[in-house]
Length: 198
Image (cartoon, rainbow, N blue to C red):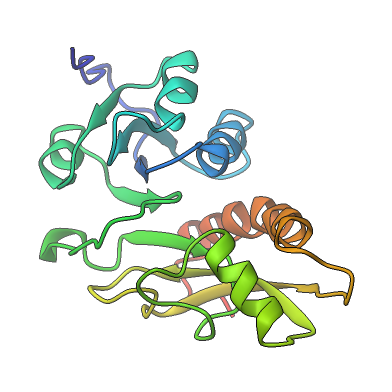
């Protein structure tokens, strides 16, 4: 059952309406939900769309009272929810951005793009590749989504140190901690200033 879209009069903060796309556990979504609820960047999350029914992020969203749907192509739902912006939070399918949302879709990737991006590079695949390449730094990248994997304009990057003792798990934990700071910061500066984030 699809929860209805709230139709109350929007406030100044409600003018920015985020739809979140995810495929997995929803930890990035939960972080964004908490940032929105605390008023640390303008807008609110009006719905979560998952690419698969098993995504635990759906459970997180429902626990927060946020409408959810399962869809391979999210755009009909995004428009029905009247979302003004879209935030990818572990969406693991190729996303083709329609003209009416060009420049309004963000993603966070667990590497310092352009390195270790592209098809098949997500989660532990990225961290294992970073370790195999002998890199001493990794991190995360917030970027605008275009119609190619991980190739849109970069808004913000945060770096972490890679130690000789790191495993994919320990590196993932460090990168995820950086992501929790980077994504809200990039969204806030992007929306409030309207300027590219350097």
